[in-house]
Image 1: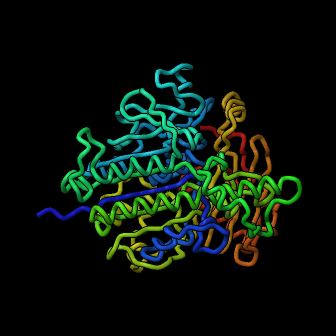
Image 2 (image 1 turned 90 degrees about the vertical axis):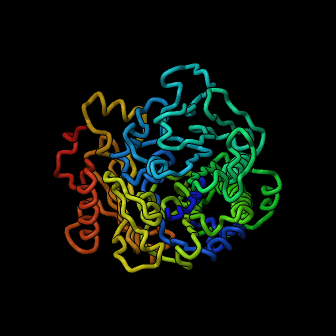
Image 3 (image 1 turned 180 degrees about the vertical axis):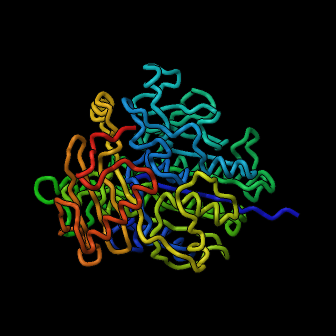
Length: 481
């Protein structure tokens, strides 16, 4: 008799920071469904976005590998060769190989824009967007209702298995949830008839649902939710933007909260569907985000791709009745650990090339050694910088910033492209939770806590083969691909 395999529903929003969840009490945002879901499952309070930018971290989440391995070291966009490597093994690849009915719905952003090869593609894709045809570039996902990158939340479009664009006049998160519900019920086929229990008889499903909101444009949210926050006072933090940009930042923040609350409602529809189909107990559900958003913090009107807490900390909730413990856990959980940990929890083999850690013991509430630090990073993504480095025979990946997040500290070393020097910042997130007073170092530390953290960061660089040089005595300019 074959062991019953659970379903997997993995849902992630774009640019949704950990602070913007009602139950945490940090932002004045309503998320009643998510709050109840968290109470019924496990909340990881120290979930980290390894590379807080869309394409790089999506590749990390799907493969369990760091950017230099995935090939995605900046956003997939015109002028850059960044795309998920052809030989990448994703969680979709593994689950399909184990008999799962796999699906992907929503934003993909892991392939080259079509205009890189054809200025007028048959699909009509423009800018950063692309139609991904059936085949190996879908990385194990059979059912496909997606787009590469497009930020029109109120008038989205998608492709299935032909270049014919599917245009929709509805909020993207609501529409994608409708499509996901049909998939869960087994209605993505031609007959439109659900078999019940998740459809397709005993075959388990694995669905990844990628919502774009609350990613900007922030104002593209259903009117009822924008109106809900229109006159709401905001609980602004000490590190919030001041001066002329503050009014715009506050409006963005209200619209951001509106999108989160509207997303909360759609997540509730997914949970209700699992109950109606009688498969809630047999479905592993994960809700998270690819990275955060500063939203007016640290004098940035809108930004991610930086080491601040609002950018690297993400919500992470997981529920599987009688399999995953209830409550909270403060283990450091980096996005590179998602793929191996889910496979470990499902009892499936983890591909050899995976670089993240299987922390499924945390989900189960078992004893185990949690990570001492999480590696965080940024590689330059400017087209001009990339071209200059290429012409000079330099490795663009030797620049940017690298850091670690420990349970208490954030330690970052930053080197701009072409600069022979680096600067260091140490944040004590316990004593300085808003990261207002970092210790700044112009030289490599010679002793103390800073030296200990520098050594920890160096061990990470060596472990993943990163060309970034911490000690300026090294010959940075000699680093090459």
